[in-house]
Length: 297
Image (cartoon, rainbow, N blue to C red; front, side, top):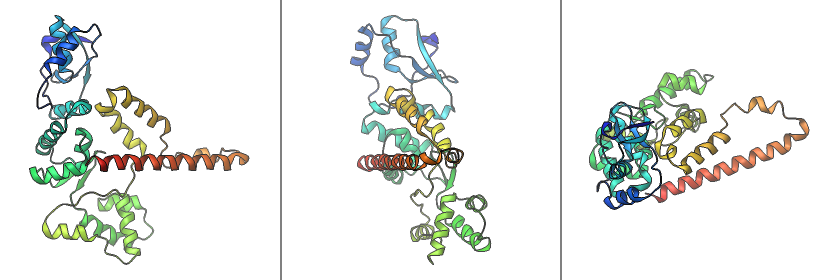
């Protein structure tokens, strides 16, 4: 869709140095068609493409092709950061993190890290320096979690003792924690341990928060929509390739049960071997991604 250049509002750029005049001139002097400019529909503010917009003006264009995105007004800067992650310097990313810690203190370290390209541990360090505290955190999956789930763990522990046959999800829903947390509480109780780890009890005593630990693996039908909305994946070829690859290989828990019964008996061993091999490859990939994340700190 083409719109009048004068109808567009300037971007709230995540780049500390603003636009590069040299890059603008090189775009303007090229004969290549400029990719669409990403625009927030409600405000008509440029999310990604200020260099392209200024190049179009230098070319004398009256209109430009745009691609609209939605979302709350307060998230326009977040979209701009995500769309430009690959070209932002470390200083740009740290500045973006500091701004998000002030505007979105309820976002978890991982959620802010995913939007800015900085490691979650680095976000945590900046949070302690900037402040950015809230009573709850909103994770990348959109779920709201308390900073310290000690109370929920204790309630889950009492419910496990009173209702040993109750499902993880039933207890999790009643206690306000994740099924993974309930599983961990059940394991600790079976080992004779306190349902609340020492680090959480210490955080309670000091009034601090506790760095989140992963106790539950999210299902693909929860994670994929989050990834599809991420501009840093949607707006470049490599990112779109990653999304297509994940969508083609995603299998939710329980989804395979309908397949198992239909596999001929003489093929079951081969299918099982292949499934196990694929699972091992996925684990290797997960570990490689986590190593990359740690190396970025």
